[in-house]
Length: 186
Length: 186
Image 1 (cartoon, one colour):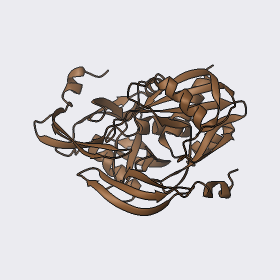
Image 2: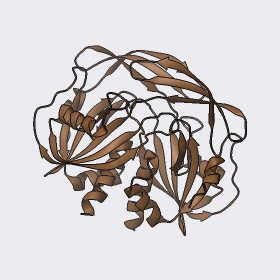
Image 3: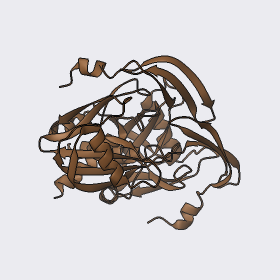
């Protein structure tokens, strides 16, 4: 449906790349690029190793977390998630680790829900989404500076909260609605 | 279901805030915070005015864009979207402007699809999502440095592409799946 010549007319080309801020979490670049019309412009963005998030389906609902998110200035409902330890870490291994560390659960069955770019305009981050089933409870293993509470929310209640706009975390909306499609298609 | 005392045990408190990078697009802060256990930590994040995105429903499908996204390094399928001009701009007015400028369409009927935080870990950005219907075509009004192509994708084809993982932009997945729920509930 899309003509590749049409896509080619949209491409940008890198002239220079500069690391303008390197913090503990954020690695910010400012690149000089050539636009399709030949003009030179600036692109500012974050380089990120990538992340995972997990819709963990228990018998009585979906495993959800409440965590204070500083940029939001409040406690946020989210599915379990975490960063890849390096850009070449296997996303499924990372998902298994993050689910166990944050919630204690291990899962007997894993299904990919695809991937998600949280903000294509200014971060390279890609989040790999998974559905985890056949859960076995265990003990959590949080980092000393990690504070989050774990809840099991019945599926119908969580879907209803998404529909009502009470859940606003992007990865959570996308992953839960995709997992619903997968579960209902079986 | 959630005890507010449990939430209170998760809160962080700001000690200091520093603007470590101010670019054309990105405004990056590094704040010193007190964690729930009394330890001091660092939070790095982007301050953002907020944005809008629009699921514009035409008779023969949903209005979609292809745009080169530098951080992704490729052309990306997205719903029309754009930044608020100030943090107190009315999101609906911004949505009307962005839809018209990027696609030429104006809409006779607007429905809120709620809001979305693309990345609660490191940006304050909140995207207000809308469903636009009763579309009337018109002429586009792109910025001189804006390059994007507009397509109409039949609903069933777009839903199928989301299910197959061919669409990975977070706001697009979330807004299209939420609009599907709204359209099917009528």
